[in-house]
Length: 120
Image 1 (cartoon, rainbow, N blue to C red):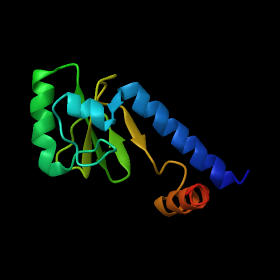
Image 2: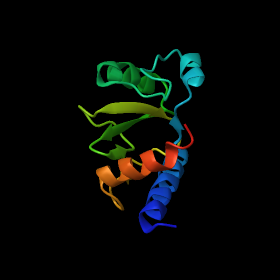
Image 3: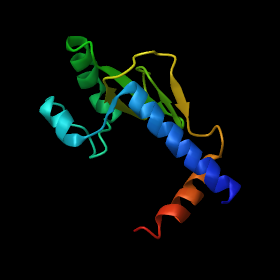
Protein backbone atom coordinates (compact mmCIF):
# COMPACT_ATOMS: atom_id res chain seq x y z
CA UNK A 1 0.00 0.00 0.00
CA UNK A 2 1.18 3.49 -0.86
CA UNK A 3 2.51 5.29 2.26
CA UNK A 4 0.20 8.26 1.68
CA UNK A 5 -2.81 5.93 1.33
CA UNK A 6 -1.91 4.35 4.67
CA UNK A 7 -1.67 7.80 6.26
CA UNK A 8 -5.08 8.66 4.79
CA UNK A 9 -6.59 5.45 6.17
CA UNK A 10 -5.00 6.08 9.57
CA UNK A 11 -6.38 9.62 9.59
CA UNK A 12 -9.86 8.37 8.71
CA UNK A 13 -9.72 5.71 11.44
CA UNK A 14 -8.47 8.20 14.03
CA UNK A 15 -11.25 10.62 13.08
CA UNK A 16 -13.83 7.87 13.49
CA UNK A 17 -12.45 6.99 16.94
CA UNK A 18 -12.50 10.68 17.92
CA UNK A 19 -16.14 11.04 16.83
CA UNK A 20 -17.14 7.94 18.80
CA UNK A 21 -15.26 9.12 21.88
CA UNK A 22 -16.91 12.54 21.95
CA UNK A 23 -20.26 11.11 20.86
CA UNK A 24 -20.82 13.09 17.67
CA UNK A 25 -24.54 13.04 16.91
CA UNK A 26 -24.70 13.10 13.14
CA UNK A 27 -27.79 11.13 12.19
CA UNK A 28 -30.45 13.45 10.85
CA UNK A 29 -33.38 11.48 12.26
CA UNK A 30 -31.91 11.55 15.79
CA UNK A 31 -31.38 15.30 15.59
CA UNK A 32 -34.93 15.72 14.29
CA UNK A 33 -36.22 13.64 17.21
CA UNK A 34 -34.44 16.13 19.50
CA UNK A 35 -36.30 18.94 17.66
CA UNK A 36 -33.11 20.17 16.01
CA UNK A 37 -32.87 20.96 12.32
CA UNK A 38 -29.32 20.49 10.99
CA UNK A 39 -28.25 22.12 7.75
CA UNK A 40 -27.24 18.83 6.11
CA UNK A 41 -27.88 15.11 6.34
CA UNK A 42 -24.41 14.82 7.88
CA UNK A 43 -25.79 16.56 10.96
CA UNK A 44 -23.74 19.73 10.73
CA UNK A 45 -25.05 23.12 11.73
CA UNK A 46 -23.95 26.31 10.06
CA UNK A 47 -22.83 29.25 12.22
CA UNK A 48 -26.18 31.00 11.79
CA UNK A 49 -27.80 28.17 13.79
CA UNK A 50 -25.23 27.84 16.58
CA UNK A 51 -27.42 29.69 19.07
CA UNK A 52 -29.96 26.89 18.71
CA UNK A 53 -27.28 24.40 19.78
CA UNK A 54 -26.12 26.62 22.64
CA UNK A 55 -29.69 26.89 23.93
CA UNK A 56 -30.27 23.14 23.53
CA UNK A 57 -27.08 22.25 25.43
CA UNK A 58 -27.95 24.71 28.21
CA UNK A 59 -31.17 22.79 28.80
CA UNK A 60 -29.61 19.37 28.21
CA UNK A 61 -26.21 19.25 29.97
CA UNK A 62 -25.53 15.70 28.75
CA UNK A 63 -24.93 17.26 25.31
CA UNK A 64 -22.18 19.58 24.15
CA UNK A 65 -21.03 21.30 20.97
CA UNK A 66 -18.23 20.23 18.64
CA UNK A 67 -16.72 23.02 16.51
CA UNK A 68 -14.99 22.53 13.15
CA UNK A 69 -12.55 25.18 12.00
CA UNK A 70 -9.39 25.26 9.86
CA UNK A 71 -9.25 21.47 9.36
CA UNK A 72 -9.53 20.86 13.10
CA UNK A 73 -12.39 19.47 15.16
CA UNK A 74 -12.62 20.90 18.68
CA UNK A 75 -14.58 19.16 21.42
CA UNK A 76 -16.01 22.48 22.58
CA UNK A 77 -17.76 25.57 21.33
CA UNK A 78 -15.45 27.89 19.38
CA UNK A 79 -17.04 31.20 18.30
CA UNK A 80 -17.06 31.85 14.54
CA UNK A 81 -16.13 28.29 13.54
CA UNK A 82 -16.96 26.96 10.07
CA UNK A 83 -19.60 24.55 11.35
CA UNK A 84 -20.85 22.80 14.48
CA UNK A 85 -22.13 19.40 15.60
CA UNK A 86 -23.98 18.16 18.63
CA UNK A 87 -22.29 15.51 20.80
CA UNK A 88 -23.28 13.36 23.77
CA UNK A 89 -20.01 11.66 24.74
CA UNK A 90 -16.87 12.67 26.54
CA UNK A 91 -16.93 16.43 27.21
CA UNK A 92 -13.20 17.06 27.74
CA UNK A 93 -12.68 20.48 26.05
CA UNK A 94 -9.00 19.71 25.44
CA UNK A 95 -9.81 16.92 22.96
CA UNK A 96 -8.95 17.93 19.42
CA UNK A 97 -8.69 16.21 16.06
CA UNK A 98 -6.44 17.73 13.40
CA UNK A 99 -6.89 16.38 9.88
CA UNK A 100 -3.50 17.74 8.78
CA UNK A 101 -1.19 15.94 11.23
CA UNK A 102 -0.16 13.32 8.63
CA UNK A 103 -1.06 14.78 5.24
CA UNK A 104 -1.70 18.22 3.79
CA UNK A 105 -5.23 19.23 2.89
CA UNK A 106 -4.44 18.79 -0.81
CA UNK A 107 -3.10 15.27 -0.22
CA UNK A 108 -6.17 14.35 1.82
CA UNK A 109 -8.44 15.55 -0.99
CA UNK A 110 -6.41 13.89 -3.76
CA UNK A 111 -6.18 10.53 -2.03
CA UNK A 112 -9.80 10.67 -0.90
CA UNK A 113 -10.91 11.44 -4.46
CA UNK A 114 -8.75 8.62 -5.86
CA UNK A 115 -10.01 6.18 -3.24
CA UNK A 116 -13.72 6.93 -3.47
CA UNK A 117 -14.23 7.77 -7.16
CA UNK A 118 -14.29 4.10 -8.25
CA UNK A 119 -16.95 3.44 -5.62
CA UNK A 120 -19.20 6.12 -7.04
